[in-house]
Image (cartoon, rainbow, N blue to C red; front, side, top):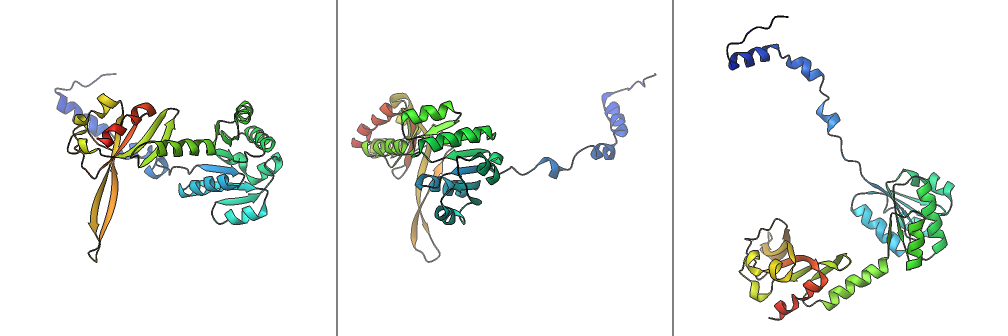
Length: 271
């Protein structure tokens, strides 16, 4: 086979484009609509509609997830039927009931019946056998948690204990506006800008170098007027702050760090 000699690069490109059939290529490409499919909403099953279970189901619905709520109490099901995707009466310890309810089709199952240890353990075992990829279970004590872990729970939670830790952390920290525990010994807090740091850049504050804490956002407050001329205070978070960001007296710092380092900031507030 003989190849034509091309005198220069431009001529070669032009000839290549002449040979290129755009219409033929287009037929091999899938339409954009078939490639950019909408993200599937995550589905959850909440087993047990006590106080904790109801709060979990309601929070998931606010997050626009699909929620299957299950309880053996008709009154609880009636209360939640208008708040969740589907509410079903079923025995959480009966495999047939759970499969009929559709638990085997969800992404995550949350077992909230911590008070009845036997029922919660059986529920976790059944859910795992049904092939649910993620199973979260509420525990009432350490032994209960160990058993749940042994039978296949992906994650075990202690709602009352975790709430108590957050509350105590908030109550014992000086001038903390908001607080939650990120991990054992590591927390995220919101604190007003200490007087000595007003007008300084984040780099100049020395929060990272002196106190070993990181600023992950700055909350700004601003006064806005409505149509009637009435003033309303609004706030927003700036999560793209740089070391050269200058903090104001009405700002709030969102900090993450070890609890012992965050407590050292108390003396800044007092100063």
